[in-house]
Image (cartoon, rainbow, N blue to C red; front, side, top):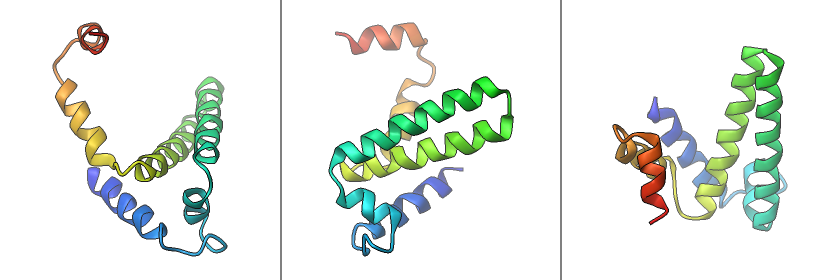
Length: 105
């Protein structure tokens, strides 16, 4: 499953060189960071509303939009899905409350 995330990350990277007039991703990457952050906020809100609606496909669609825009932000910062997956793997098997407490130290 992570293959699709890696392919998408490569596409996003390629869009850094694309014409912002012809590519949505290139436009977001060319804009100031606040534009991407605002879009993530919008998509997060839409994801919450989709979850409340009870429509499972709507939730899947909005979550895909949220993940996509988070990947654009990661690319802006020189990161990718591998970085997030590595962190999730690091956390695997650690109780959530213990992991969260360890981050505060």
